[in-house]
Image (cartoon, rainbow over all chains, first blue to last red; front, side, top):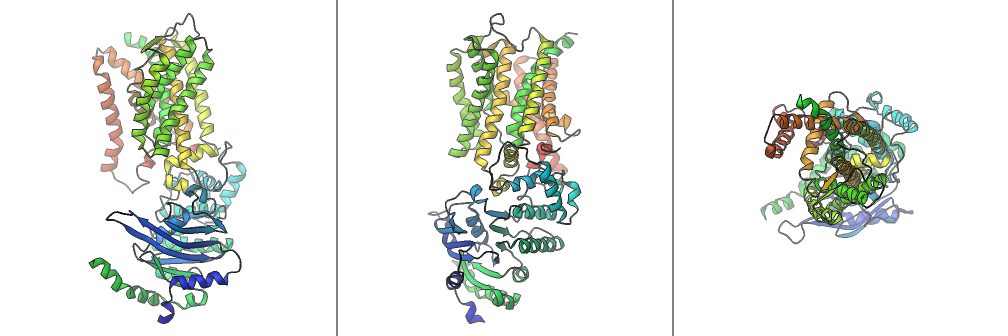
Length: 285
Length: 308
């Protein structure tokens, strides 16, 4: 087992690339991001990351604080310009595409339930905003009658009883409800890529489980290509067909399919402990 | 008795400034952008309207061009902020300062009168009741237009940008464009107020915008305090803001009638607005409830647009 795990990320992604006959849904090529370049605070957040996702892949990403997990998602979403490398979504190079344009193919759910929705707008209006993602916004009425019925049905499918509160401001909802709504908004237009950045970390365990179940339900139904960051190693193993472990801006381990299914939490913990030395060295330097 | 006789005048002024307060509501509350451009753009509206009317341009055309001039002012502030990365307050101050020169050039001098015998004035001090009726009509039409606009896809994108910029971008909204557009609309409305004000006062003055933002803010805060318990409907809030302006000018008139030193009125206005702005902060500090969407939910406001 340990021999296998020492396989570097570069090798395994090359493998998956050669295995996939058609165009991958997401291809991250040698992406590097350095924050505060040229200052004493210089930090290599992403160091030549490469990763390939086929359509319908559900990848869970784990790693310690500062491993570059969120930076990776932000690089894919286009929050900032990357220093080198390429991000290719469904064959289209989006490396230079600004965030709001990339949103037509990339949808996100953030860790903080407050970030995913517009608090002072109601449920319908939030869904309508998401419904226009990637489309041209016009002077037509934001929520029309036909949409209302569709949104109501969708919200009812969450089974949170929110369908009777379609006109309630989102600020009145609980964190879990907001996160469920954000998930619905993110998947409303069936994006090519769904990015989940520890979207259950701020929720209580029961709500988190519910939102995760919902995540699985929606992604399975849509054959949704997804990247999910999580701190919970059990979740990382339970969900998805691929797992990626990151450290210091690099992918240090990947597994997929059967290999992933065989992994246990203690396997992952061992790998984290193997990194211990390195982390200590950095602390001391 | 003297005070009662001044009430119609206070209402007229309140309605005209209420239009300005509506413009400020758009930038300050909907867009969450403290836009100091308004001190300049209200004056721009006045000087453009007065200059055009004095050279024989029909009043409605002059009014329209004044509004467009205001939109351009907002556009410039928006571009300072979005294209050049200048913080909101500084962007507004820069435009405001620049506008002082521009306004002076447009007017050609520091003060220009409008002769009611030669040009048609839509609103005038000589005829208070007519002014009040016309202003009520203008406020109604403006409220209707803005209710419609902020209920559309584009308007909603602006509201989302003001409420939660990260979310807006994640939903594919070009937040820079949304901000620029919102500021243009806001300053267009402010300029409309200026154009009406110069007709009402029968003159345009290069200094008429000084401290306008404080007056406008006072109107917004008073107005929202009055209507926030009644309804969170967008149209109701806009009208509330106008009511706030009327209350402000009525109280102002009352204080003047008491014989208060008018030199100190700006000091009083500033302190009053500071106090009003502090109240929600103090409330939050002492009655802290569950954490909410930063301070932004306090603006609340505009949520009911698009219903029905």
